[in-house]
Structure formats: structure tokens, C-alpha cells
Length: 484
Ligand code: ADP
View (cartoon, protein in one colour):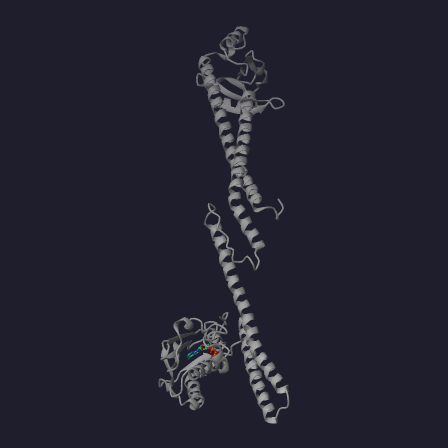
């Protein structure tokens, strides 16, 4: 069968061949046993006839055995039921003395081996061919009188009927074997249809799957067993995942377009105003400054987008090295104080005495901390407090940015790590926020084997907690997972 043939047909053919082999071996064994048993029965019959003759002729003097009367008496004693049996009496020297009347008796002759066995007082059986496809079974038996062999008696029985019976039996076995293997293979073929049918349906469903019908799930076929159900469910889960990816990437494209369109519209509007009518040098400088701000905002946005898309492709290698956490957070603390000064926000650092070093990409981790710190300052009103608190928790360092700011509603807390998610769209935009900062921070922290969590009470403040492992991952690298 060609390798491309249907699995159902291939399996059926293989099981048919295997069944034939098993049944053939079993049939051969049965046939062989039957043949042995039948021959054993026949030998038993011949032996019992031979023993009767031997008993009757035990006292006959070999010297008197040559007379005509002797042979007539001998023949009177031979009362075989069928012509398939015959008997011949041989002298001790192997000369045939009397043959029974059946034509088969002519086939009885004393071979050297038979004669030797009989001469030593033992019975000897043999099967011999006496023509094309014709066989006889011969028994050579010693007649013993006065403790010595006086005659050799030979009995013959045609095997024609017996062989015909065995051939008949053989044909029945072959026919039964073929019928059994054939019907079992047919049943199997029908049963396999129960499995291959749904597999075909799933394949068809996959072929027809497109972006539009991805959400039409496949109803798992019933009565087909757990495996097919599992396959159908796996397909459904895969379709759901792909649907999710597509939905997110569509959303991403829409968000990007929207984010870029806004600064472009502002740029265009301001440029048009600048071009309209006579403008003083000061007015023009203002327009150019405002344009420059928009351009740098777009530049940041494009950088962030580039970073996210590279992270999605796993193209941002992390430069893992020993990083002194105490130094980094102190540096940040001073930077934070400078940023917070215009709003009179107090910045605190709560740190343990011990020196701790992480194994991380210093620039990326600084970027994450700075983002959380500037957010804390940005969303805390004047006169508030921002605290950087860090501690060791087993094999992890835990860094928390606590502020007394505006806080985040519970419904928003679940989404602030999503790309482009901003609570107050206009307000944040004016602050230069794009809604990408936390998405990037989350991805970077997770790429280092850590995690980031938020805890916030609206009106009271927020805490952003980061945990980072002190030791590298077993393979010594940080594998960036897919970002949000
Ligand atoms: P953005 O660049 O707009 O700040 P982020 O991804 O950093 O974007 O933050 C997403 C949103 O989460 C922000 O728009 C803001 O509404 C909210 N947010 C982040 N940090 C804080 C904080 N410390 N306090 C209150 N709101 C916050």
C-alpha cells in the first residue's frame, strides 16, 4: 500500500495480515496435531490386528508354512472390512509366504530396516509412497514362538481416505481463517471510521479556519473516545489563543495609529497657525518650541514601541551582570529628590544595612525603577511623600515605591500594565505619558525572573512592589517572555 494511503485502510490491511499470520500459525498447529492423532489411531488399529495374528501363529512351525493349505487357512482368517487393508506373512528370511487377497497386499514388501527391527522382536511403522499422491502405512511385526522370531507379519493400510479427510479439513481451516480475518478486518475498518471521521472533520475545520470564523468553536464529537475529544478541545483552545493574539495586535495597531495621530494633528495645527498671517519672532519661537516638544514626545513613543516590538520578537538581549542594589537605589533616591523638588514632595529611602547585589541588566533595571519613581512623583500632589523601601526576602530582593498620591481605582489596577492603558487619557498625555511605561517595566522585570504588583487605595496613595531574584536563572540567562 502506498505510504500516502489513508491511515484507516493501512491499519486495516496491517491487522488483516497479522490476523492471517496468527490464524495461519494456529491452523497449522491444529492441522499438524490432527494428522499425528489420526496416524496414532491407525497405528493402534494395525498393532492390535498384528497382535491377534501373532497370537494365532505363535506355535506354527515355519517348516509347515510353505504348504498350499497353510496359505488358504491364512486367507480365511483375514477378514478385513475394507479393501484398504492388506496383510502379508514373510518367512524369517524375508520371503513372502502368504498374501491376503486385497490388491494392496502386492505393495507389501520387507525393507532392510523393517526386517532388522522385526528380527530383533520389535514392531516397525513406516509411511511410504506407492505411486503418485498415494501413500500407505505399513507395520512390520514379529511373530514369536518358542522365544524366537518365526515369521515377519506385515500389515498395510492405504492412507488415501485419511489424506483426503485431512485435505478437506485443511481447506475448511483456510476458508475459516480467511473468513475470520476478513470479517474482523471489516469490523475494524468500520470502527476506525468512528475515529477517522472526526479527525477528518477537525482537519476540514482547520482548513476552513480564517480570521473571521476563528471564534466559531468546534463541538467535540461524541462517542469517539477521550483522545479525539482532547484533539477537538486543543484545537478550540488554540483558536481562542490565536483569536486573542489577533485581537491584541489589532488593538495595538489601532492604539499606535491613535497615539501617533494626536501629536501629528497638534504639529500640523500649530504649524498652520504659525504660517497664518504676520507673526513676530517670539510667536514663531513659541510655535517651534511647542513643535519640538511634540516631536520629542513622538520620539519617546517610537522608542518605546520599538522596544516593545523587539521584546515580542525576543530581540532584546539582557546584559546580565552583578549589580549593586544599594548603590543603584541611592543614586535613584538623589535623582528622585531633584525631580520631586518643584512639587515639594519628600522622598525617603528605607534600606537595610547589608550590601546586596543582583544579577541583572543594570540599565534596564534602572529604567524600570526610574519609571516607577517618576510615576510616584507624577501622581502625587504637592507636599506629598514618596518612599523607596527595599528589603531581602529569602532569595529575592523586594523593592517598593510607595506614594501618598491620587491612588488607582480597583477596576484600573488590573489594566495599568496593559499597553497604552492610561486612566486619565488627556491629563496623562499632557504629562508626557504614553501608557507604555508600566507595560515595559512589567516585561523587563519578568524577563529577569521577577514580578511586579500594584496595591492602591484611591485618594490615599499607591505602592508598586517589584521582586527580583538575587541569583541568575539556572541557564545563566534571562529569557524574555512575551510582553503583555
Ligand atoms: P504613563 O506613561 O501614562 O504614566 P504608565 O504605563 O507608566 O503610563 O502608567 C499607566 C497608568 O497608570 C498611568 O496613566 C496612570 O494613570 C497610572 N499610574 C501609574 N503609576 C501611578 C501611580 N503611582 N499613582 C497613580 N496612578 C498611576
